[in-house]
Image 1 (cartoon, rainbow, N blue to C red):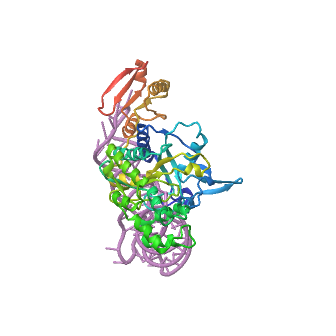
Image 2 (image 1 turned 45 degrees about the horizontal axis):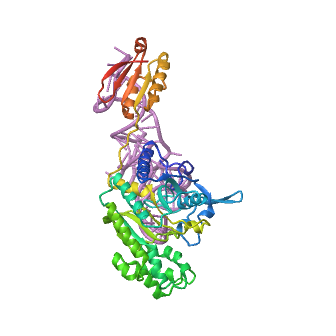
Image 3 (image 1 turned 60 degrees about the vertical axis):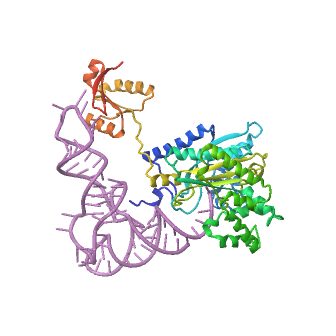
Length: 426
RNA sequence: GUGGGCGUAGCUCAGGUGGUUAGAGCGCCAGGUUGUGGCCCUGGAGGUCGGGGGUUCAAGUCCCCUCGCUCACCCCA
């Protein structure tokens, strides 16, 4: 039923009822378990940050879609992504941290944007980052972790593939060419080039030429850049790169490492992947469902200069963000969303107020042993108690009536079998 | 911002060309044993038909406006 808008969750946000939250927790548990197995530690930061932490000059959409406001002379914002907050935390303790650092987060993020399938204004995101490791071994660990997660949720059979590129490769090529005199145009160029698959080559060329823009290439130069993005094989990319390319060597090394993890066959080199965030400097990647029906399941890359940009030391880093929305859509499409029970173990019911103290003592004893115990609060008939316990998925019901009390026992019923027995109360 | 679909019970939805007290399934509540669940049977509660206006003897149904949800595009994580 349609309710007044002030009684609905704002557009793009969600209420999580118990059954919804069970599913969310299930997913988060997998995020955390994979992170744990890879030796990552969980951290968190405030949802509200100084807006300046997120505002950058490269024209990224993520900055334009910031939820932000002025309050008591402070410009605050809801975090649209986790990386800047983590960078802030790393910077604050840079001198005391043993590198490389492996941190992960599972957080709520906000982005004010139009809604479509797989895209909401409020979403949760799993982040894994490695700080202080310049080599592609870090990328390999992260990609392996993504595949580990996919396998845990039932998508380990190639339903999801990762497209991967290196901004360093693109940068090497362009700095030997059209950006020789203007290296600072590289970041805005990446933001534009990221749109290739969405707006088409002509529109990208147009934006790269824009005399009012930050890139300002000639028409021929812009077309050359777009041409570079069409490369799909690593050998072709190598051929187009400057001789002795460091970036090509790193990509080759990365694929060797991915082979050692057994996931190289699910990763494709694709020069058109550059990502829409300005701070990426090296390897960048995105994961998509094999049918390409949905938006990217996750994405990430290397950002070796971000900490420097924020005024900190130069610590290389690489990470990814993995949202809860697209993966849930994908799991639903594949019929992989699990049916999760409440996890209630026991129901304890006093039949008659005189038996309540004994029922409370029993419930507390069971709880102390770690069981999930629902104590029936009102004066509910056994019929109802049994039915409710059954629906809740409880294993057994403990009934304590005058008869049992007189004998110092409690009636225990196993719901699965219907078997009953008396058990001593103390 | 553009275009489409949709708003009827807690949920999922039916309700040809406008016509008596608006329906189903599920869920919920009660009963079918006096202290015993699942299955089954019976009964019940629950609806400003998103909101406002209009046409009409008569509007859930037609027209206009409006709000909301949703999908696609635009744009972008």
